[in-house]
Image (cartoon, rainbow, N blue to C red; front, side, top):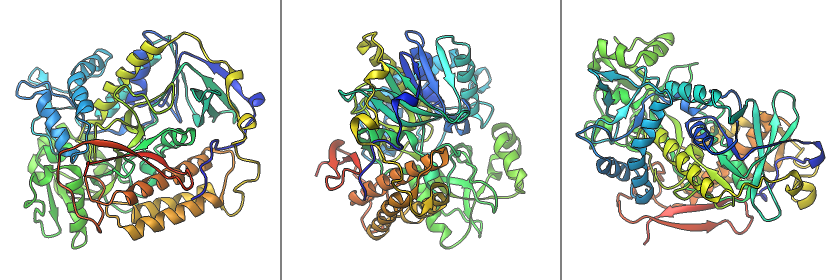
Amino acid sequence: MGVLRRYLCPWSKSGVRVFESDVLVLGSGIAGLYTAIKASEYFQVTVLTKKTIKESNTEHAQGGIAVAIDEADSPTQHLQDTLKAGAGLCDPLTVKILVEEGVVCVEELMGMGAQFDYKNGELALTREGAHSQKRILHALGDSTGWEIERALVAKVKSTPEISTFEDRFVIDLLENVHGDIIGALVLNGETGELEGHLANAVVLATGGLGQVYSFTTNPNVATGDGMAVALRAGADLMDMEFVQFHPTALLIPNAPRFLISEAVRGEGAHLINANGSRFMDKIDGKELAARDIVARGIWKEMNESSVYLDFRPIGERRILERFPNIYKTCLKYGVDVLTMPLPVAPAAHYMMGGIATNSYGETSLSQLYAAGECACNGVHGANRLASNSLLDGLVFGARIVKRIRDKFDGKRPCWEEVVSPEDSQCGIEAGTNMSKMSGLSLRKQIQDLMWSQVGILRNEESLKEASRLLAAWEREVLLTPSVDDYETVNMLIIGAAIAKAALDRKESRGGHFRSDYPLRLDLDGWQKHSLQCKEDNYVRYISVSRAD
């Protein structure tokens, strides 16, 4: 491995246009927008987004948001389900916060304009994998994320204390001589100019990294940028070995790996093989077992036969009512789920790990916070419980604002405080890494390597080979000042972090399955300890493991 760069590109303070605010939010999914809205009650807020304000993983979320509001349910039951799904590695404290404070946050979300589905005058609830109760709120049948994003965007646009900038790519975090994070260096995609956005507090809410894999349910923007910029600035990453592969994505030639919501199985759909047999019948929970179990069950069955999701047990009327978007999308690619089974396969879906934070979203760096999928506070453990992700973004986004209020001193940083490559002598000299491959041409090679060697099944040999190739490519990449190349370098860095963490965890647990180590089923004992890659300082991260 090479030495991790502090700055992705050379730059000078004299050539940067500067903006200031109290709170800088990077990302426009549920975590970013909800945090911005809550912060706007006290501060001037800036929101930067990579493409358009609506483009994020949130918009693509189908199933819903989990919250214990039914009389037959309770936060305690929700906590127990989350801990069980997390395979013993959830932090019970953060899970308790999630399930208890989540109820109020969802009520606030509805107050901001999010409209969920009702049935007989009551909020309609459904069940998904590894949930013991029906507790999933949904909107427009299977377009929950779209509805939440719509409501939050409308609220942001009507709030004068929030300024939004679209088409802004975050290159790196900015710090002062004391090591405080005081802003971000940003590429304006419209003008090609560099911008410096300064603030008293910086919140990373940049989403996931699904595009690191060749098959993913994530949109094109999910390239792990927030985790990469945090790592370059010196922040700890946590649980990077735990990537969740959603069991059911559309598997049709020339079609994207469109997500087929877990709610489909929650409503009664069956997983079958080419013979029409339900191969998950012998597994505890069957089609509604935890996601890692179902994904591996499908993966194993695919070695013998094609795998299909049969909607027909749900009933035609209920399919059209509950899953209109899925029905229309599948029909577009030639499959009528009312009359025939749908071919499916697993795809990279969610990162349980990310930037290590405490229960208030504080990272290991002063004045830097993180929320949503790019963050890791221990709430998801080794395997996220279905529909807990949207709730995570709400709850811990709100807690970040509480902590910023407690620590806010009212003094905004100034541009003169910023440490640049010229000051620190830790940037990249012009011409470095300008040898063989363009960043964009590398992307497919990275994705294919991660899928084949650091995917659903892993072993020592595959992980070492992946680490070797990723390090070699990082040394050879041709880095031009473009979003495509910056994204590719971020994918290399994050891919290396996943492979390194997966190599170090010598067991199989949750979303991390090593064919050369047994599955650990013990659910007791949550411990956090630091592991350092001392020889090259390339990957700094915290790993979660059981105390032996």
